Image (cartoon, rainbow, N blue to C red; front, side, top):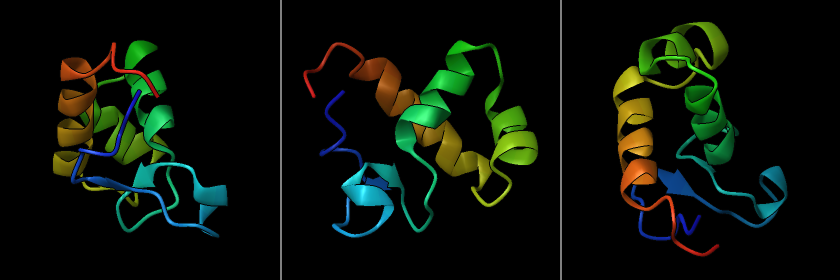
Length: 73
């Protein structure tokens, strides 16, 4: 997935090896999507798996991923 146009993620050299992470965290954006695919709700992801990420940001990342799931990396 091409995360470049998602305002809720960032890729910073030297931070998480430059991987796309949820903005202001070290949580990989792909991990958020993978957990949703495994059946976790945005609320579960935010409270049980990545409590450092606000649920509204999780929702926006998942919404972006749904809209762009077939975009090349």
